[in-house]
Length: 233
Image (cartoon, rainbow, N blue to C red; front, top):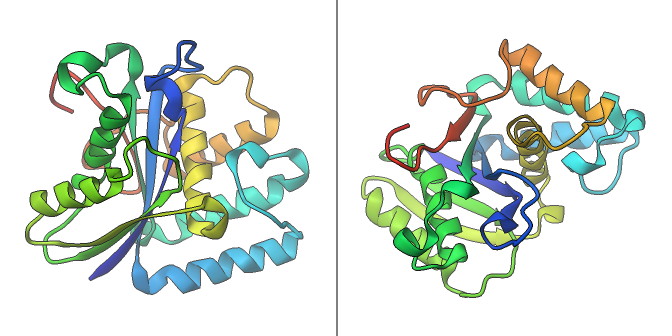
């Protein structure tokens, strides 16, 4: 089976900033069968047209005037059941030993955690294309290295590509941004959350039947991997 995975990150500067704005670096990924891509995009386009919403969908753009649209986007995500799945990793930057484990290289550490996010949901005998939000790396080979490591760790699956693209071009990456923003708002406690954003968080929680927070490894719909840097889950 062929899968596509759309990735985004929240607070990616936590490994390098002298004044971090939060506790957890978070990277998220939206997973779906490639055969459903056009259908899901079509449904999102229909919602855009009905609500007269244009431009990029983003967590930061959620507002009272667009709340109905974003609520229906969340309902669309849950309406696909296990065919549309979200996973994110939360990394406590204060517990990172960059010198001992990442050659004092924040960028290297970032992509090691990217690997941890993706590797555990790759299944044998399937094909995967990963789309990552376009960002400037100090080393131009980071994504090629990520692809190589994922391939070597999953010899019975095919890692077709790990490709950077601007989020503005990929509506499913924008959906990932919304889900990741909601998870980050709970884990990072991003200060006072606007009523509209809080309504989206609570809508997700109502559909899940639980608060947003770390989950068991077996959680398949909305998985939050708060990594234990001392080992284990």
